[in-house]
Length: 153
Image (cartoon, rainbow, N blue to C red; front, top):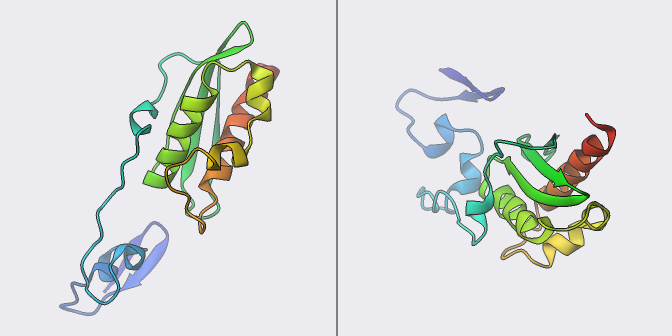
């Protein structure tokens, strides 16, 4: 049996119920040798800050080249100040990165927000994933949203 999920064809033998038989990348979540899944999602202190804004001045979407998921960022700018930031992400590490970015950049003037870097973000994360560049992608999405605001897009 071949099951197509997210562009990945998975070959499954009859009677195979292993985690990797039905879900792509499940092998990354399974504990080595036990067949048991690790906790489904980690939570971080700024997770609640990550939510789409109802009103915003500009938005941008950046695609992660690591997991192929989108990072959407929305900004609300008033009198040159970033009054609010929102957005959506699809994984817990990106959520941590965006939540931390929101807590640090909200209230900054636009020039300071432009100078906010991936290193600034990494220094404030509860956990840094050395295999993923989502921290860099979240900052890139912020910069794209700032550019879109400046261009009036």
